Length: 268
Image 1: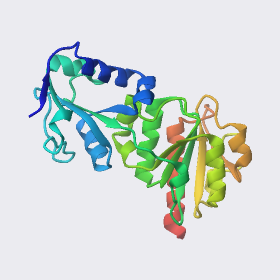
Image 2 (image 1 turned 120 degrees about the horizontal axis):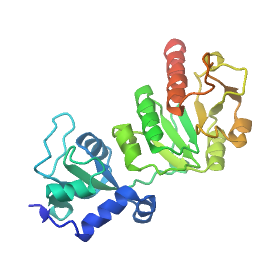
Image 3 (image 1 turned 90 degrees about the vertical axis):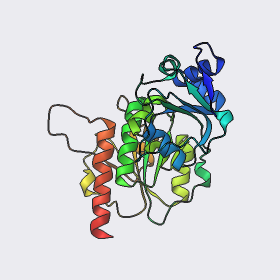
Image 4 (image 1 turned 60 degrees about the vertical axis):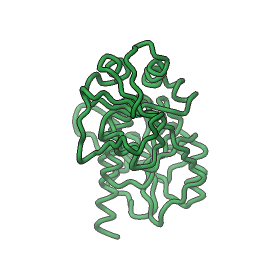
């Protein structure tokens, strides 16, 4: 049997609101909120630990494609809430009626053993969580082996990042680290480092992506730092034939990642 919460002033409800709204709360507690059937189902399939699960029976409807099971959750962690309470804790009001509090997994780059011919994406200085989520949908679709998030200006489990990723944030190998750590690790593993930037004559289509490769992308406002540009074996660009001089970083990742996949399908 679940616990019932109907008071908007319940301390547990206030703690969920803080997790939804404050990166500092997520960092301090090591927990974060996951909203929606698809997102929660993928989180649980990928071993995200359930700290608490809240559901509103007036809103929640089972989804056979993305099931959210209640019967395997300890009743001390399961909470039925009124519609008013759910709307208070929800990032998206009244949508799917279920919110899980998960514990952030430990993912250390130093412990990761890349595959024989890994394809990786490096993101430096990402600021917009929606962009991060969109990029993770792309890397999931392309089958990228790992994503390295360096010097981030948002946190990985921001509600907008989870929402924009449609939950595939939980199904991928993602490592948050500093740039120097990532560069040293890539060198140690013998992974070819490429960088995407507009200030180069070299087109992305002219580069060989068939060996172990990491492709670095910078934030839209600043691009890649000189550290990455100098460490890269080759800087490549996407040709811009219109009046603007750059693409949204999620579009740039999609274009280059799928070129790498195309080459690997042809030549490997």
